[in-house]
Image (tube, rainbow over all chains, first blue to last red; front, top):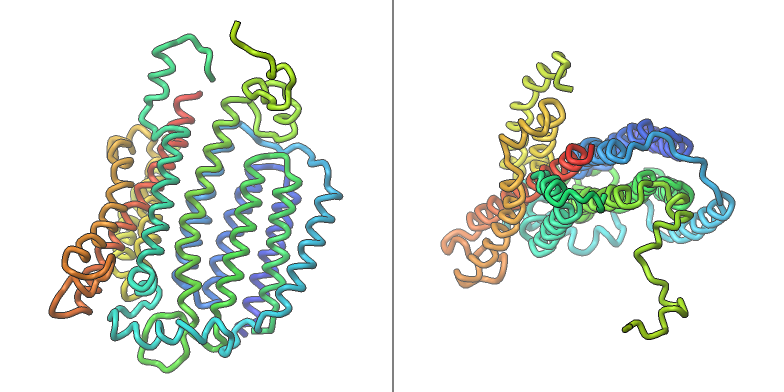
Length: 189
Length: 132
Length: 142
């Protein structure tokens, strides 16, 4: 049963992605991208990653879509022009995909309980975190405690990205507009 | 869970995203393709963490096995970092639009204005002394 | 969208539960799915919804852009501050066992609660800053 739900959702994902590739209207593409993220969140639930699904649903289907729509509104782009140089791209994609297929053929099956991924730190996290950390959600205890450095780095990256946005397009304070009206030579736009 | 089925789909999605990045002339759609590529890599990691018959890694009294929480942690943070970097890319697109008036890659490459502020390091005219 | 009564009323009804849900996800993340990252994004999404429906000016009078910019740094400082605090109490950096000398598990609880709060503040503030950046750019260049 789980397998069929998984396969069905993955087939829908592939169909959505093909529609994104073929669609030329950018607003419709952005909406399809939101659907893609929501479907991906459903796949994550089937694969037991509830925390990840939660994040993907709120980030991918919410924030990313809004930011892309805002960019399209600023740039006034409605329609994508016809792409050229398709054949070399198809060749590159097919060759890369074939190499990757050859590469994953050596991986253990999905869901294999004896896979290398579940033989090392996995046991420590599952068996000890209840007494060491005392938090029922293992994802939280790994995220915040065992891998606290890692998460500190990630938060710093998010902060840096926010800083970069403020440098590039401002923080919405209207200072750019005031500066532009101040020198009113109109040379930079 | 049906062998390597998930991994094959990951590769299909990844290659479709890669194709969008290479073929689409529109910069916003390129970023969308990068996002699809990135999300399929997330699916690869989550598939690695799945254990058949397992449940979500939240401690309960039942004796079911838990799926591996480590990939979940890595991907959880990667998704939020991903949206922050996507926003940075979109901000760059906005700046490109305000400087050059287009977000179409073909137009940008054809337009002479794109190059006006950049000096070609191989240009022989630059070899001459400039202090007049 | 300020002239659509259906959207305005629906947003007014939905935004308080969304904010409350964000706080639930933030502080209940130890026991169920959730945590600082999700809570921050949901909190930011509620503010963005308010901005989309009622306009940028109304939103910026609720959370001024300067405050949002400062809060992005406050979260990171709170997180790193827990690390420094644990060093001052004689442990390693981000070693929450040192936060409570009698009961290490309680120390872990305190540490996780504070750093998740730091993560939530930074993520929510960055999401709001992103929205302010794009929406403010649209306002200034039309």
